[in-house]
Amino acid sequence: MDAVDPRWLIFLIWSATQHYTEYSAQVSGILGRDALTEEDLESISSFLEHVILKGCGVTASAPNSAPKSSTDAHSVEK
Image 1 (cartoon, rainbow, N blue to C red):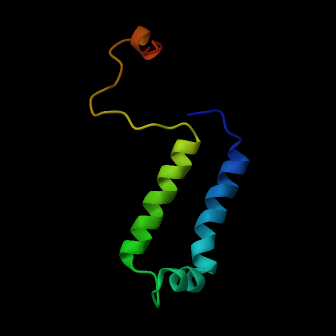
Image 2 (cartoon, one colour; image 1 turned 45 degrees about the vertical axis):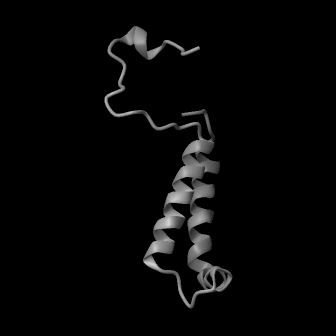
């Protein structure tokens, strides 16, 4: 994970999620719906998770890709 100021990170997460609570009527209207569906909420969650984690420099690792030794943990792929 990149070095990010945790205060700004929590404000970002808070504001992004709070937006959908306070402005659900506007978001629903833009999406052409009367209300947000479970699928919308899943999509919103996935989107925010992706953007926030990627913005913090967090990348997904392949299953079973943990380093085998401490030297492997610090090696850099070229």
